Image: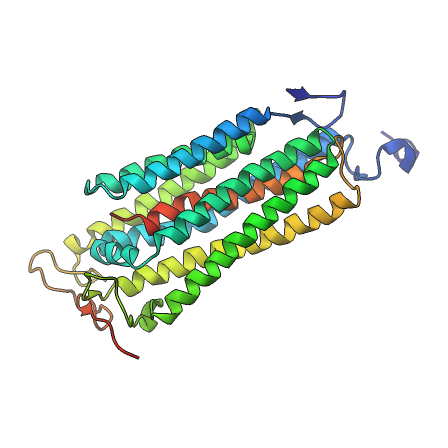
Length: 135
Length: 229
C-alpha cells in the first residue's frame, strides 16, 4: 500500500504484516538450512552453499525489511556499487595473496610450493601445532 | 528569486516544526535523509569489507586452522544470536510500519522489543566472550588454549589468527549493536513523548535501515565463523 497524502508529503510504502511474517519465516528456515548443511561434508562446496544461503537471506532483508524493492532505484545503485567495490577489493587481494608464493616465495609466502618448506620470515611457531596448556 | 522574496517566507508558512528551513517539503527532507543513510550504509559495507577480506586471505592461507578454530566456537551461541537479530529485524520493520500508520503505542512496543532482543544478543556475546577468555582462546600471541573439545589433542598454530579475525569482526559488529541500542532507545523516548506520527514517521525508518545493516553483517559472520565444515 502506498501512503501518499499529497504533493510534497513524504513517500511511504506500507507493506502488509503477512509479508513481513512470511519473510521472517523464510529467514528462519534458511538459518536452519545453513546450520544443517554445515554438518554435511562437501569440501569446498560448503563455503559456496553457505555464501549462497547468506546472500539469499541478505536479499530478503534488503528487499523487504529495508524496502529497497519499492524504494528509489538510486539507493539500489549505491548499495550495489559498494558491493561491487568490495568484490574488486576481495578479488584483487586474494589474487595476490593466493599466488604470490608461486612467483616470489620469500615475499611473505606461507610456504614454498617448490620445496614444500615453510617460508622464512613467518612468525615464530608458524606451521606447528598447539596443544592445550594448563594454567 | 530576489532577496526580499526569499526573506518574506515566515516560519509559520514554511511548514511543520520538524521541517528544516533548508528543505522545501517533507518529501525532499525524507529523500535527502534516506539517501544520506544509504550512503552511510555503503560506507559500512566497505568498512566491514576490510574485515571480510582479512578473513578471506587468512582462510585461504590457513584452511586447517580456520576449520579447527570454528570447532572451538559454540554453535548454540551463534545460532541463538542469529535468531535474536533476525527477530529484531522483524520487530523494527513492524515499528516502522506502525508509525507509518500513526499507531504510536504499537511503535513503542515494537521498538522496546527490538532493544530487548539487541540486549539478548549482547548478553549472549558477553557469556560467549567470557568463556573464550577463560579457556585461553585469545587472539594472536595471546592464544594459549587450556582445553580443547573432546577428540581434539592439538590445533594448528594459526588458529591464533582465526581468533584475531574472529574477535575483530564480532567485536566491531558488537559495537554496532551497542550503537543501535543507543539510537533505538533515543527513538523510543522521543516516540513516547509523541514526537512521531504518520506524517513524520521517518526518523524511525532511517534508524531501522541502520539496524537492518547490523543484521545483514551478522547474516554473513555467522556461517563464516561458526559453521566451517
